[in-house]
Image (tube, rainbow, N blue to C red; front, side, top):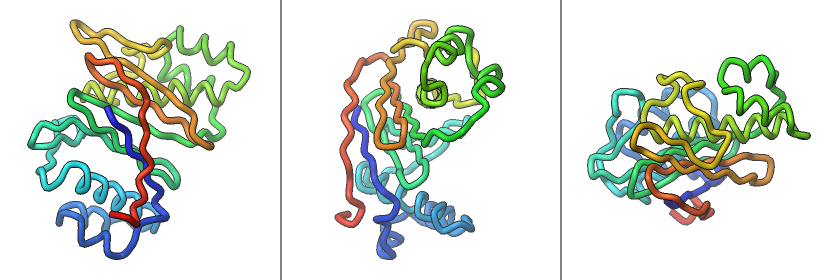
Length: 199
C-alpha cells in the first residue's frame, strides 16, 4: 500500500480542468471554500494516481474503481489522504480535538479499546488513534459505519474477520493522526507528500 498526502492550500483554479464532470459537480455543491478545495484535491489525486478509470459505489458508500485498483480517500482540516493498494485498503486522517471520550467511547469502542484510553496519559490522543484505526478498518472492509463499530476491535495491530486478516498501522503527523488498513497483506506506513501545484 502507498499513502499520498496533500495540502488543500495547494489547490489551483486550473485543477478544476482535471476533474471528472461528476467530481466537478460534487465540488460545486459545497458552500464552504475549504470543502470545495478538499473535494477538488481528492479528485486531482484520484486522476493523477488512478487515471481515467471510472469510479462507482460499492453499495455501502465506498468508492471503487472499475479497473480493480483498490483505493480510499480521507480528509481532515487542511490535508487530504489517498491510499492505493493491490488489495482492499482503508485510511483515515483526523485532527484530534476535544471530545468526550468516555461518552463517545461507550458508543463506538469495545472494552479492550476503552481500557487503552483509560490507561493512556493522553486520553484524547489515544481516542483518535483508535478512532482512525476503526474507521480505516471499516472502510477497508467495505462497509464503513453500516457495520456496528463495536463489532470490530482495533486494540491491536490486526483484526481477523472470518477467513480475512486486516492489518492496521497508525502514525502521528504534525497535529494529525493517520491510520491505514490493508486486507490480507501486512505493510509499512509509506507516506509520500504530493505537491498539488506540480500536478
